[in-house]
Length: 44
Figure 1 (cartoon, rainbow, N blue to C red):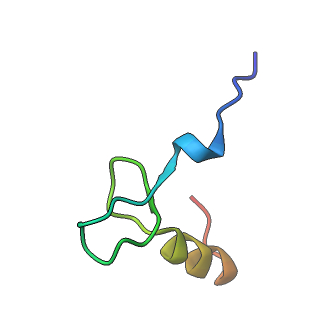
Figure 2 (figure 1 turned 90 degrees about the vertical axis):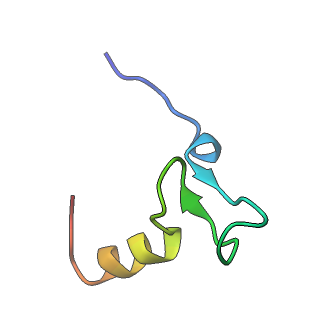
Figure 3 (figure 1 turned 120 degrees about the vertical axis):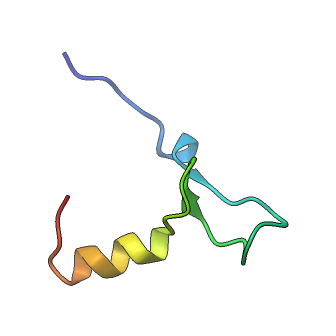
């Protein structure tokens, strides 16, 4: 069985914290860091 998750619920940007870059919810991992790792060939 497949579960559908809205991507908008996983990516957040909270004003007043750090540099306000979009991050994965409940972590400090930025979307930019994930894109850099993906482009470098890294996988989970």
